[in-house]
Length: 335
Image (cartoon, rainbow, N blue to C red):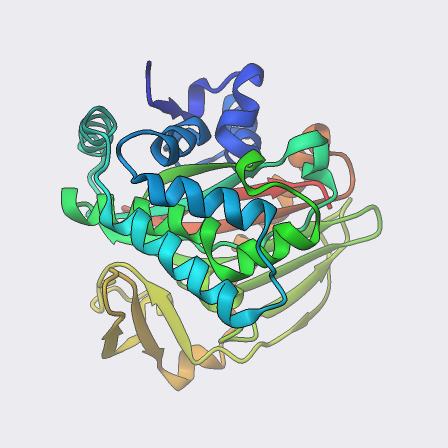
């Protein structure tokens, strides 16, 4: 069985195996919208991984107990179960066939860095009613075999975290019925990221330097722009509070583009390729998006209406490619 699904080839019948995030991006990509190439490690792989010899019988027993008998209101017990589950995942071996396919697939990308994104499909058509955007985190890693394996197991282990066990138990959903797929994409030269919320009356665009991690973790207040959806006319804008940026590579300091004016003071987070760059005061006081950048996003927004309707949510990123910035979608959904 093929273990991976490429974004540009995903079919409607594979939706539950690739999760909502990957499925929606695949639809956009196949319609010609700008989406970073990638592949999906299907949810079925995790189910097999939990049940077969790659993971011990202790994991299966703990999973059944956590789904059926665990008192999630007992925080100490909840943490103990979660830690045992994570230890089982991180200490077990990845199936050799899957390992080989992943390593072969990422060789086609020039980037030295990867991002693994959780992509969930829920039972009983609950995908449209559950907001789980803050439940699981993306995992960034170097494009090295050992690092990729650790990153994949780390993302899988989040399904068995204390907050995940608590959330699904309180919502009456058996953990074993959740399909957690993993979208793998290259990361390279990310200059700015943000979100787009569209409805019939206006567009709301949020933007910050670097990866969207700083916005998601609440470490910056992004710039906010409000525009008229039909004309793209800027109605108002508010400068955010942006003192840092996350990235996975050393952006060139010789480039005259102000997007690259970052201090050399960089902190690399432990066991990840993520770096935190402190921004120069000049860059902190500057709006992230130029008039041309805003036009690019509003133009994309007007096209998305044909696929998503007048109200939708999207995440975007600008990537430096040669001498220009290219806009990509990283997530689309209906609110």
